[in-house]
Length: 91
Image 1 (cartoon, rainbow, N blue to C red):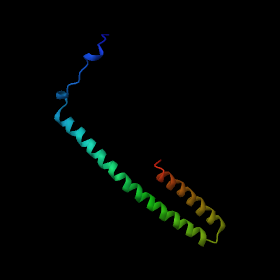
Image 2: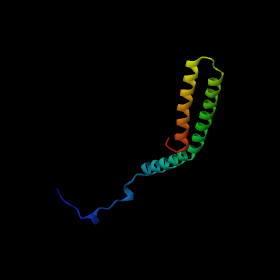
Image 3: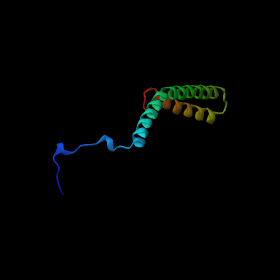
Image 4: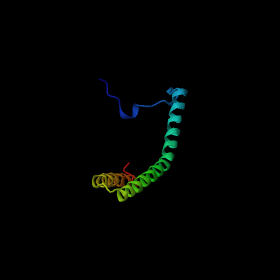
């Protein structure tokens, strides 16, 4: 095994094919687009969670069946936890 001095390793950019270089550029652009969509997607998810939580709370209030009230309350609580994790940026 031959050890090379640290400064002797060079990378030639001319060895990268134009196709590979183009695909790398396209990948970085698509990544930027995906990152710009994330806040909008997060807002949409939070909005949907808010609607579901309100619907479950209303169903819990209207329901006269005790087990149903417990289920509506539990599911509502889980959705609140998911919403909080979205707001904190954990998801």
